[in-house]
Length: 486
Image (cartoon, rainbow, N blue to C red; front, side, top):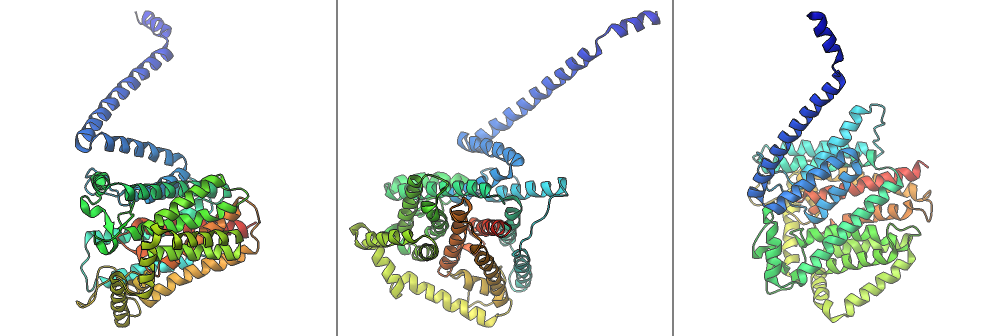
């Protein structure tokens, strides 16, 4: 009998049987997974709604795409910064991470995974690496020292860690984006996203108030503010002109973003190999310019103006003619006279907002005088007669990190522009890289000038502005090192 059984076993096609078995297991696994996804999707639709669920599905698909190509992660980062900078997950998972947190975390994960799986891949620091690390170390030291007089709260701790990660994003950029083609692709995304947020800001500005309020309040699902307060006015007085905000909540924050987008796009208008056709570049810049005026952000207007003037003086002479034409239009058109008057009042220090800023400057200088070396930290002021809030990046750094911290930041910027000066002598003309190089550095210069009048590029409450600034520092450094290394 055993011989008969053996012959029967030998006749069995074990390969087909194994295939059928695994096919059955695969089918059952797919069935179970489909049921679980269906249940989870149904729960999400019930809790968050179909639109949010669809957005999460797209986000998950995008996250899987990022795992294959880190460039896609940068595209997502720019999209979040420009279009949904304050958005958070609509579902509680113990905490509510922002979309920016998720994208930045995914970028770090993909980059670090690449370092681990490819140990022969070089780690690029660049001459800016050490000054940035010193700046970060000083930030941590002053943060810890400041806890001696102010309690540590979860929001402060979380936002401080986010600031550190957003600054460390510099190292991810210079190690993963080095080729001109990569820089050009990301520039396209930045210009498109900036155009979209500027266009949205103009549309919301022109819509009737109740319609704009309803549309912006729909973002409340993502932890955005809701109600009439979503519309912003000069001095928060509804009897005064409205200010464009798009989805950036604050008009000055939107203005800071438009500084960098406008300065990045201006060289493309005269490039031999622009990232888009000149017609589209002109449309993007015009939209950004109109939206910037509608924000009534005087500091942002000055920041972009200085960046464009420097571009006109050093490289693109024809840009100077366009700037003169734009100034004439703003100065002569009846529709812009309110803006002109508002701007002049600010220069003279006549309006209430400017006078309040002067008060902030006095309080900041008082704190700096009392704690000049390492500042008061990030958790709050040790003195009841002062507070840590001032509309200037440089004064805010000096208050929180002391003169030492501010000096460290200025050293980082000095090294950046010194390297840029060296690269300028070798920069090849009429190439794909040239207008990108000029645009990145002009955007940083505009942000630094705008930072004299506002604080969003180093503020715990505006993480996307911090990330955007250091993204550009990384891009400018990558472009400079590409030029010097040739």
